[in-house]
Length: 270
Image (cartoon, rainbow, N blue to C red; front, side):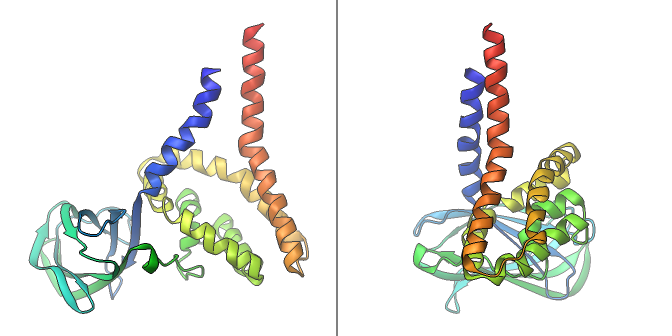
């Protein structure tokens, strides 16, 4: 019985931990670097810790020795910085704390001027950070870089893998073709983007975890492939098939494991 209780408690402990961190990844103007900005939920008047990672877009690993400038502004007025040209040998900035004095949209702007001790023409990248529920914006549904498939892309190694292409085509050609599907994707993205960058990064760092995710995605991909073989001509059909797929996945990922654990528990009691 202790094992069964743990099965239900672990998701409750893990999901909030992921949901508390916000992450965005954008490329510099010429695509020389990917810059990842992460931060906890922001409260006005309190200091918020920013985590900045400079990533090599080819190797997907942290790029060491970066020279950068930083300024945080709102409505064109600086609220933090500008920080003069600064060097990070690790390629990561961990201890930066910024106070966001009021609700609104803030601009976090980086200017990269050197890599591996070599000066480069300045490349900028800017992040919009929303403070306050009234200014919260869901992540974009359509994205040219496959952002809605971050976990699958990391698991299967490429945006061009058949599995990732299947997810993207299903999203763009089937789900987003109806109003109900679009509404579902908007809600789903708000939840998905709260933790997917963290999982995708961990997949790249831990090959064993990557293989485990790949195996765990297979049943879901199989169930979703059903939508490629049916005609969805109305909102009612989209809702019906969508509910059916969700229930099927609940059965595979929760129902079957719980049933197996109960059977093992009953067997051990005999």
